[in-house]
Every structure is written in C-alpha cells, then in structure tokens.
Length: 620
Image (cartoon, rainbow, N blue to C red; front, side, top):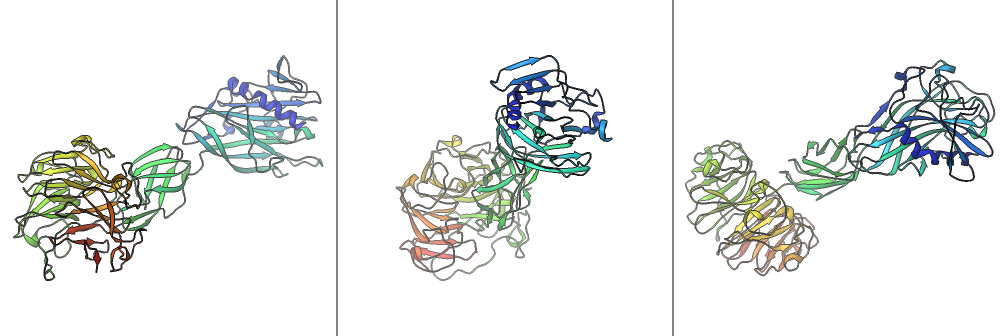
C-alpha cells in the first residue's frame, strides 16, 4: 500500500509546484514559523501546500488544496490516480475520509502548527510540501534542514508508530528519502516537541532551478487510528563549508600570493581568512572553488577558513608562510672576509622613512639592493614603496616613489611616481635602475634623473602570464631582476614559477619554466623545466642565469640557451643545512643569489646565513 502512496506522490510533484508557487531560497537561508499564521482561512506562505489522501485497494485519491488548510477545512480539488496507469483523472469532490490537514489547535489546543500526518480512519494520511527556487546564485549541492515535529498526545494502539518521512527532489519527479531510517522515523510517543536536523547531499539544482521538500506520514497505510504529528519552525540552510585544499600551499610572509581554495559549500561565502587575517580579492567561482590573495602574516602554518551564512569550516594547517628574501642580490668583494658595517639605516632596527646620512636615515623592510659602477647603492625599500639611493658616503635620498610611504601605480618623475611593495632592483652600465614592482606585477625602469616608466607588465597592476611586448606582457608577483652586459633583463616571476627574459626593447619571453604557471622540480630545457616560487636571480658575464628556487630549496643554473640544471641543493626539493658538493648540499628556502667576478655564486637562505658556491660547483 505504501508503494501506491509514493507513486501518487511522484506523479503529483510537478503539478504541486505549479499550483502553489515557490518560496525563494537565498544563500542566507530560509525560515518559517507557522505560529504566525493564525487559524482558519489564513493564506499559506508561498511555496507551501498540504497533501491529503485516502488509500484503497484499487486507487489513491489525493486532495490538493490551495495551501495548508486550517481548523479542519478540507482541500477543494481532488485528483484520482489510477493504479493501472499514470493518467490523471480530475474529480470534483473529495471523499468522506479526507478530513486531514487541519490545524492541530482544533484537537490538541496547540497554537497553529500544521499537521504532517493524521489518520482519523483506516489507510488515511496527509503530508506537507515546500517548493523552493534556488536563489543562491550558484548550483545547489546540499542542504541542512532543521524543524520541529510536535506530538499532541500519546497513543495506546499497538500498531501505532508515530513518525514521518522527509523526501527531497531536485526535479519534482525523482524523490529521495533523506530521513535516517528510510523505513520509519519515529517521534516520541509522548506529548511534546522534538527538534530534528537532517543533512541532504547529492543534490544538483542549478541557479534559479526548483527543488522540493515533502514531509509525509510514514505509516498511514498501516492503519493509524489517531496519529497527529505537527510541523513547525522550519529552517533550511546551506551546509557549513569545508576546505580540503589550497594551491599553492605556501607563500611569503609579505602576503600577496594568489591562491585557489577548494572544498564544498562555498556558495554565499562572506569572507576568507588565512592565519586569522582577512584575505583580499576574494571571489567565489562556484560552490567548490574560491580564489583570493593571501594577507601578510608571520612565518609558519596557517589555517584557511571560509565563512558563509551557515558557519565556517574547521581549523586546519593547509597553508604555510615562509620568510621571503630579506636581503637578496648583492656583490661581495673577493679577497679577505669583508668587514660588516652599517652604511645607512638605524643600528637599533628602527623602521621609518627618513632621507638622511648614515644611521640617521630610516628604511622599512628593504629587500633588494644593487650597486652601480661608481659605488652608489640602490635599495628597494619595500614597505615604504620607494626606491632609495645611497652614495658611497652614506647619503640617502629618494630616487623615486612617495616620501610618505604611499603605495600605488604611477609612472612619473621622482617622488611623483608610485610603487607597490617593490622587492628587487638591478642597475645597468648606464645607470638605469630596473625594479621588480611586486604587487603591481610589473617591471619598472628609472633613469638616472628619476624618470619612471613601465618597461613591461600591466600599467593597471593586473597579474597574469603573457609573453608579449611592453605593457601587453603580464607577470605574477615578480620578486627579483638582474641585467646582463647587453641590457637584457631576467625576472624571477615567482607566482608564475618561471624565469622571464626582457630585451632592451621590452620584448618579454620565457627563458625557462612552465608558461602555464605550473610549479614543480624538473631540470630540462626552456618551458619543459619547472621551478617552485623562484625568488632571486643573478647573471654572470657569459649570460648564465642563477636562480634561488625558493620552495625547491635549490640553486638552479640556466644557460643562455635555456638549459636548466641544479647547481647545488636537493633535486627532490628537500630543505636543510648541509655544506657539501652539488646536490649533496642542502638549503632552507633560499631567497637571494649574487655573482662575483670570479664566478662564485653567493646564496642567502631564509635562515639569513650567507653561503657561497662556485660554478664548478662546490659549496662550503
């Protein structure tokens, strides 16, 4: 008999939705409290309708009202479903036994809870249906449904099994029982309210599509002489999000790393935090993918948390912050060990912005340095968003960028220009300075007179991967630059996992690394090679390029023909600290490299200990 009942339900699904409209389901969820509906004659909420039925051995006669009836009011239109076919035959009056769907207040003194199931005579029951439109703006894959079921009195009949079924349909045709026990879900056989929460997965409802929920009497066909179960306080929400991955899985403490977060139930996301700090540029691609940019954070593991109106995912350690290049490319003289002294800046590690002489000057997290042929030092004063110049006598001035530490993107002269977290600098034989303007995703050029122009990359700060000429090219967080004797420039395009080459005319090509930005560890030629967040570059007198391959913890060498080999460090990306020869040596996230006139390569690991390698190679 129950099989006949379900057949009837399935046949009526589409008709039900058309007759009674649909409620909207936004990303913020849906609630309905029936207590506010009053009693007889109240118009039901949009999308709701009552189903009542009388089963016999030959057919099922269903009464489909205009809504949820109140105070014993019968539905007004009936549909007879033949057991021999699915042909629908319209009748004009309900049968005598269809006294279902009344307000529970009529018999139990409740306020106005709507009845799921009543059985005043044998094989008679009822149900409630809700038709909803997916208004979340994304494909719906799951739901959390919370509701109260109300038992108005205990029963003594032996075969009385008070309970309900909850069915869900994504198309009004195919229904799935989502109650924990598909055979029977009971409620306590005592008067009172039971709160339930059910999780529904496996849906696939397109944006603006329709889905249905249907609460039904689970045993009306068994003969339930006095079963009355009410429904109230319905709350439907998206499940809380889960985060299963983030790519790339690490980035520098500076932030600014574009990441793709994967998981479930991202629809309607209101925010993303990484290490407890809000990410920027958050974009919900779909229910399982979010793109964002990492905030600045201290080194170490960080939790990636997505928040939606339904809650937030559990804490995790999916992302790792590593210390970036704290003093990349610089040249050490040959001969006896150098004497370390302070050329400019506070000897007490005080930050600030002051153009002055020697220790009276102030910087804020300077990252890149370069030296010209006359001994002037150029500094990428990263957090001050400026390029500073230091004479051999220690006089510090601002070559280009705001003296107030303002960031931005402006090609202009001197202090009228703007940068955004510049990290790397290089200088050519004529005194032009080249800047890896990291967060503007561009390579800038500064003449000796301070005139700033864009050599390559978007003037709007747009990231990407495009080999082209000038401003048509695209980079993604370039971290360092080096220039050879003929004026060609080499760029450590960190987030694109590639080494790019720029001719003096601004033509950008890929010297080595994936043109799709794919990370990895492969010694090969040109675009078949793979790097993992290259941060530092240097070039020798014969055109060989040396790379601090940060996340691979290795020093790579690229010939002028694009052949990539490992000069020193593990070819499996193992980090550590070992002075040895070639691939037996170990580094810990190297961030900077520099060359001397004898072909020695100097390496700055994250641990800030200077290492040296010869191009033979040997490390000690």
